[in-house]
Image (cartoon, rainbow, N blue to C red):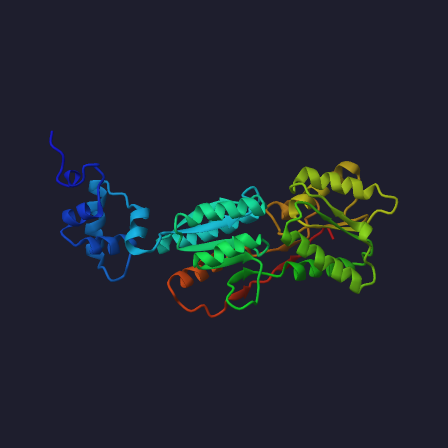
Length: 342
């Protein structure tokens, strides 16, 4: 049994772009353009090239393509955590936007560790990514220098910065924290606690908003802040709620930094027989799945993570193509979801 001419073209047996070109009766550059989906190649020719590639079992080599064209076909994405639904939704939006444009996403999870982020970035830059998406602005100076020296276009997500030459898509965590605290004050609450876990930069920005609003009202009390370094969870939320309500002077409202904590608090309130909101109001942040189904329904801040992912990917696509970005600092805002728990 003899091998096909295509398979004899390389001693390794790997089907190459030249093999596909020969089978389709076109030039290698035409094959490359057809498989990238460039509009300059007609539909009939694209179909012929794809048919030849499918028959030969051709699989593109991203590394070879990047080396030949000085361009990569993947984008590096650094996120803090994938156990958080917020970042899962953001990443899915990023992935769905880059895919049709011919780019793949190379994801790295930093676990909120600046040293781990730096190492991940070093590893990913070795693959010569076409672009980079990173979360927020809080990172080591060494990591910032690494990004700057790489020359790779970068877009920051979940936070915004008006600084020149910086591209970002997000919203003001501080203003959102201020707005939710103001809502609780408008409902007549005066002893408003701020309960937080994980203590990442965005959580601390929400805390800044809470403090500013309470100080403006002349009601700030540092003893009402309940900050824990552990990862956010339902169980921790229930534990924090019980501890806060056991105080000699318990709060009349609790602003939890994330919905899973607040959901855990509502479950604990049912177990402890504490009435929400008549005894204590409970509010969360991010409006995660399940919050609207809680009893009572949870008041929260809806954050536009899907739109952030989509718009950040579109912004990075423009930068990678050398196109002008009209709005480098894109603030997508937030929405107060006022429900029964407050």
